[in-house]
Image (cartoon, rainbow, N blue to C red; front, side):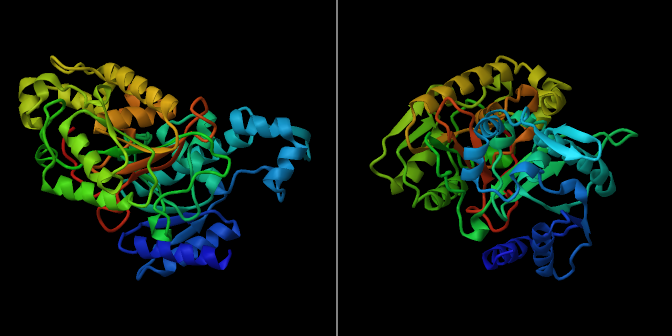
Length: 419
């Protein structure tokens, strides 16, 4: 690794050394193994490190050692397929059995699946560190969340970026994978980048998706939905920290849900950008919980026994009493998002709510209401979404649920209260 790479690995170790890991896994390739060793050298009691070929980098043998421009010139059609249809991209390689057609992205996704299947049962309920590469990390995230290989290029992984995945305990006698949540993705502030820069060829909008700051009802765990609860003082402080975090980012537009809590969050952020006029969008309002609004979970369970558990496990099947279902939220949130993307130019903030943001994040990867709980959105968190090929092209999730500006460390420490 370069000196810069070694320094970045030490910075990862510095921010992770307060956490306790049961074990660590790395690719056997030198750059990943050395990164893992530097990270663990920062720990007073480092976990055991095991190298496994299951998390080696994606294999593109015909392009190995070539510059991107050289690949473009020598293999223009193949490169176009690689960019636009990575799940269908193939390379014909020689082996002892003759010429074999290999699908690199499908192969690396299968390797990622085997890794999770082998490793998770060994650490049920524990915490592990995985140090690998750009391509295999995308596949590890994709296979954990059920993101199809076609969206391989929609997941960004920066050098020494940190991603946090939460796996529910394995269930059943065969240890079936339970619910999985992406707590945060591609955190880079510890290496001096608040979030990744756009790609050189970037020609579409960049949207910074923000969840509003905390309210008293968030803190208490009370369902608020479309009741217009304002920020509490902690929520205003979170918004001020988000404002400071985004202070040096050149903003070209700002859009918010019309409700009080995101509107105030956006207004605080825009204090550093007085030239930007805030636009309000009613379609970005939080999900209507109907008769659940203003109630705690215990009260909901008493009035609607079993429905709350169904909301937590099969949210796509729940019709909120006198409120909305997720399909209705999906339709209005995604229509509003697509309209914003189509008209956007440059970089802007979109400030909304937990359910709205989750619907948008699912939409980026073709996921459905049943996948609602797969993405975490903390109060005051920032996610970065690029459209590098223009508004009609596939989006790229550059970073998700950044909360490092709100509290030290990489874990989301915001309130885990109701929506």
